[in-house]
Length: 104
Image (cartoon, rainbow, N blue to C red; front, side, top):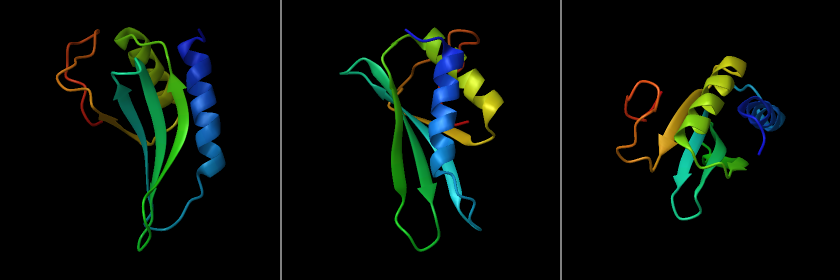
């Protein structure tokens, strides 16, 4: 099991390979809760005008604990200013402040 710092650095490193600044483009990091596989999947979404959305897989985190995910998200926020969105978390809440896990 890697530390959240190392995982965040790896995710941001892979993300930077695909990041190419374009005018009017939208870039987001998507975190999907894979309840069947007991993992969290990270994707880099690119939306450019008059093109289809690209969703690039970045990493699959198999440490399936919300405390670990929360630390990982904090480190990713410190390394990048991209918007992070969450899917399939239902009514789950962050362990530190009990707020629902929703769009940032």
